Length: 78
Image 1 (tube, rainbow, N blue to C red):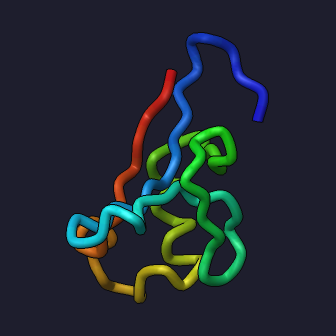
Image 2 (image 1 turned 180 degrees about the horizontal axis):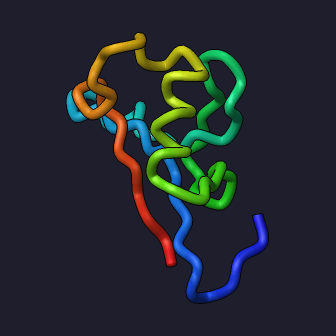
Image 3 (image 1 turned 30 degrees about the vertical axis):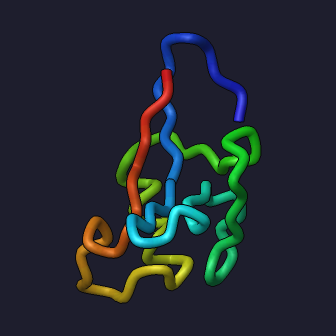
């Protein structure tokens, strides 16, 4: 994604408080997702809603479930 310095973009981070080894950035939005510990590989989204929609579309969160209760964070970068 190409962006200028004033554009915000968002990435999905998988936060597993009980397991520090399983904290990763979403890098591929296929079913189940693909994860990387390197933020340089992160998939960037144009909005928070687009990032959240991806969690459901990738079957990472069941329909109707609260995505934030499943160890995911949506982080913003400018």
